[in-house]
Amino acid sequence: MKIAPIKNKKFGGVITNVKLKNISEVECSEIKESFLELGFLLFPHQFLTDEENIHFGERFGMLEFGAQSFANQKKNEDGTYGEILGHNIQKMRTNLGNEYWHTDSTYRPLSSKCAILSAVKVTQEGGETELADMRSGYADLKESIKNRISDLSAYHSNLYSQANDLGDFPPAEINSFNYHGEACLRPLVKIHPETGIKNLFIGRHAFGIPGLSRKESRELLNTLLAFVVSDKTRVYKHKWEVGDTLIWDNRRLLHRAKPYDYSIPRALIGTRVAGEVESELAYYPSDPEAQSGRDALQSELALLQQESGVKKFGGSTVSTSSIPVNLSDGSVLY
Image (cartoon, rainbow, N blue to C red; front, side, top):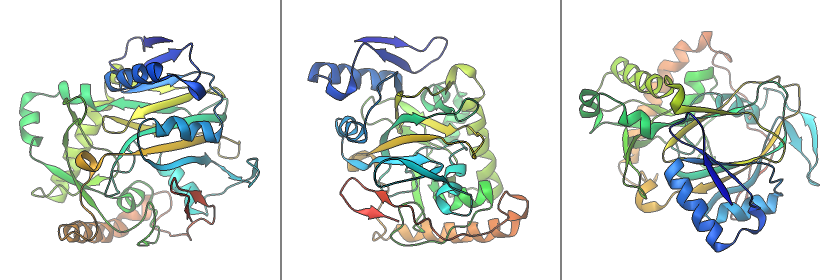
């Protein structure tokens, strides 16, 4: 197994001479060590099946979901792909939202540990995945900024980010994976639970810093995000090839999908690993502090509804997708 850091970047690596479908315990240990050091790892030409994708994810912990289809086509029961999906269903509108910098599952009570994508169908133009390093971003901040944000937190919600970025207001449903109506309070500066190193913890789902005005909060979050992605040594763009597998640390990195022609088929398999309760839990909806997040979210959504006319969907809503999502516990989410 060969591990090579990404050239001219402050993070990331490529691992070759290994088959993820049958890695040994020694190889798995080396992969995990490199993962913590580098933040993301690319494994070219693995061609993992759904089952192999899930099995590799389980090496890192309990799954949020396994081998979910991230595609602009409906996935058939036999694993083939059918009709191209339009933006009149929430699945595709959520995919569009993923074109903005974010970290997975910060809008859920238990944020994600890491994510895995494997390429099944790729496009010749666009459709890349970009990653940005919040660890080196934090390290490069001025001390005055570090001091200013050291004790600040922000709420995180996918209802907020869809409305803010796209003017898309999906209906809140209590049992929804994404759009459940809760907003989770998380610190702007995160201490990584395994490395002990500080990094920023921001992205499109973050809003409403307690103690700051709405204007101050938005300006600060936008400024921090712009700073992280302003240095090309902190940003990596991956041009997919069929068979590639990419894993990244959601506790450290931002990522986003790049746009492409949505009339052209593109399909990735996604597996997401849940974070450990000790480090990634904000609070559960039943906890008393959860109400402050709901209140902050409802106030913000009301303002965004007034401002949504110039956004892509202009404040419209759609029915949730009928495309099923298979979760790691065997249940099906619609």
